[in-house]
Amino acid sequence: MANLPTKIIITLSSITQAARPVHWIKNLALFAALIFTGNLYNEPLFLKVIWAIVTFNLATSATYLFNDVLDAKRDSLHPIKKDRPIASGRLSPSFALIVALSLAVFALSLAKSLNPLFFFAVAAYLALQALYSLGLKNLAIIDILIIAAGFIIRVYAGAFVIDAHLSVWFLLCVISVALFLAAGKRRAELNLLPSGITRKSLTNYKRELLNSYVTMFGNAAWMSWALFTFFESPRASLPVWLFLAELSRATTVNKLLMVTIPVAIFGIMRYESLIFEGRSEAPEKLLLTDVALISSVVLWLGLVVWILYGGIASYV
Image (tube, rainbow, N blue to C red; front, side, top):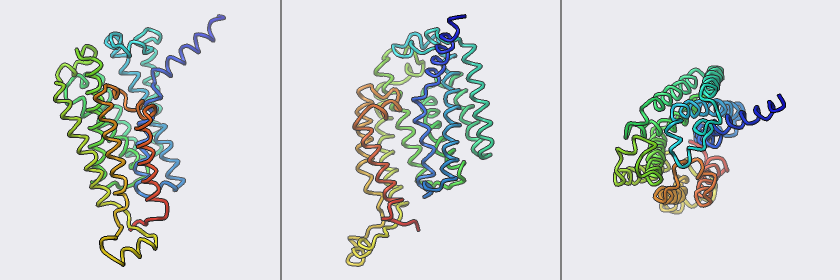
């Protein structure tokens, strides 16, 4: 009995590790709709998005636990994943399944209280990730599409919960970036595991094919953002810019978001360099550890918020 508190602490620690809270950073994508629809300072909507992120945190952790239970044997062969709680034997698979089911049910209950469409988005995410874990992850190309779909669902779940509209240009941005991140994840895994021993789909990917995917979706990502900034930028409102626009059409400033394009290109180039170094198997970790990538993301986001909310522009 004296060891009971210690066992409880170890179990809780193992559950927390298996839930992978570091991956929750991906759920910040739910803020996208709030930011780009001009509602960042709307307190009721802001709180709804916070609760939506909490919901997705629970849902994503449930899917990671479920996936780790199914992959325990294969993960034990992985140079990094072998230390995960379930693969290493520190956490019972049956107990992990109970926790995963509990988290999923809690997430669905919370989602239902927020918004009906948001509930369906969370349910769709859970179903898609379950199918992924049950076998779709072993199908080349399909696995990349499902990983990308997870990012897309997050962004539009954020729109559903606040009943916001996102333009088709923004949808194009989201799809392109999601495919870029997913393809980059697989390309980095190929560097780490050339034999594909711990992921069946890797045996069906040629290095040159994944290189072309990364290049194609990287180009699509910055180009779609450039199109979004061109078609969706708010108009300049500061008197000095309006005065310049009166002097000459060449000085007209009504595409302010286009100043973020170089930063976006740098971020994509930096991420691609990390991909080919084999350091992007977990994109969320790079966003917390790579200084150049963190700096580009912070600068890009800072410029976006400044342009949309800093008083230098106004929505039409």
